[in-house]
Length: 133
Image 1 (cartoon, rainbow, N blue to C red):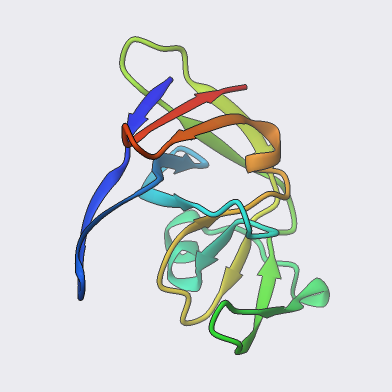
Image 2 (tube, rainbow, N blue to C red):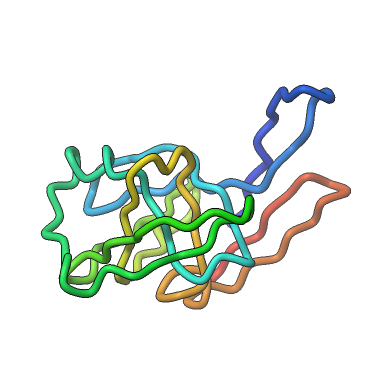
């Protein structure tokens, strides 16, 4: 599968960032940032109001943010289904644990049971993402 980078306007101009249009448990949640440095997939707590996933609060973990702060990430009790679709291709489907955090603004796709399940090539000069399982 091949996807285009997402165009984003920021304080210093227009940039292009690698995102994928992901569905979780059958719900399209929009474009999620491919974060190769993230240990886990991290979702805003508000997304769970749509997914209604049971959280494993006993196994919440402290996580350090890129800005130096700390927050608590709460895992799902069970693996959820990720789906990546693009017209003309068979969907790529896999399952993995996701983490939720309050005040998390961006959906981050991390290594644990997500990016680690896929073969991803980022071609920044061409602003293309190639994905295979």
